[in-house]
Length: 273
Ligand code: HPA
View (cartoon, rainbow, N blue to C red):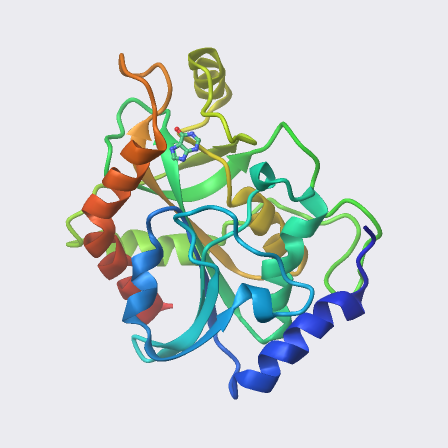
């Protein structure tokens, strides 16, 4: 499918007809981290299925709602539920959420995800501020005809995880009761977890954590020059690090355990950006 600027504008016009302000910060919530959205004051909730030209979330732990409102005095929009390549979407479709953010006036984006820890100095429950990523598999979401209104055909990704936002997040880590690192996220397509050999390879390549999301959204944000912060929650040690099997259940339990502290950390960041 070839997208046009009009395609994205149709979604944005629908949302703008419902929400009477421009949200300053856009947040995309990862697996098991969706409860955070309950904290949004004066919420205006839009179901993904009601937005023309949008996608629907097929993962159980992803609610499938856009929630607008106030957090820490800032106007925000929160996507409770994201879209992944492993759900069967094309990479090109995965630009849709961030382009909607851009067109409704979002100035900064925060992405969160559940991830497996590759770095053996990390523990389950730790947070990683993403400082860079590795994506060696799958196409770019920016393949296809370039839409110049969003950004240029060839674009720089040197500082796509915005340094000033990472510095703010690092400062906010003080006193939040969480172990916070800065590291490299490596994208795997899923839906299977990685093999132990893939994790050993990821470690040699310089990855600190692995996951199945975030990078497509981050690249879309970089393309349209959107300042970006990405936070990974270590929900498990990656395959082969410990002598045990991985499960989605384990991911959910670990995410739930730190959900409150993580929400406080993200709120503190929102307050300071
Ligand atoms: N691998 C990929 N994605 C993940 C993992 C993992 O170990 N944990 C949570 N999301």
